[in-house]
Image (cartoon, rainbow, N blue to C red; front, side, top):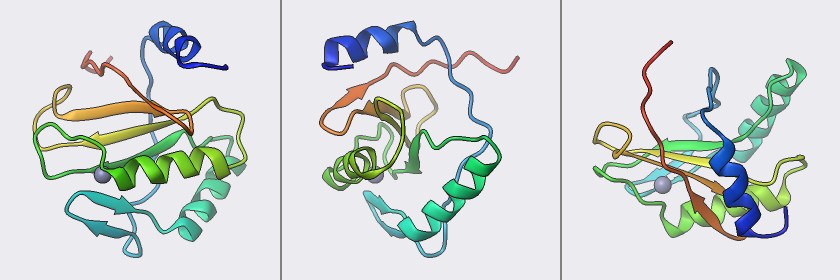
Length: 128
Ligand SMILES: [Zn+2]
């Protein structure tokens, strides 16, 4: 995938994603009011353990104390570095930020390709 037009095309074809397992948060992560810096060593170990079980890391999530969360500069920097420095076969990683308002408006969901963030339109479809 070479540009954001290609990325947008792929994202339009994704109807839903389901996540059953997540890593963190950990006591050794660093948090401020609007940023979250995971303990990368602990995270790498968790990712390796899940990978052994056939489960792949696809991105990060954390919460913000705001109704409609917006990624901070630190969030963008962290996820971009994660995409660029990790050994993976994906075109980008998900960034999910859970705010204080109900989803979908209270969630920020995007894919970062290492250079740019591409916002997704999250929808709630209920459980099935
Ligand atoms: Zn954040």
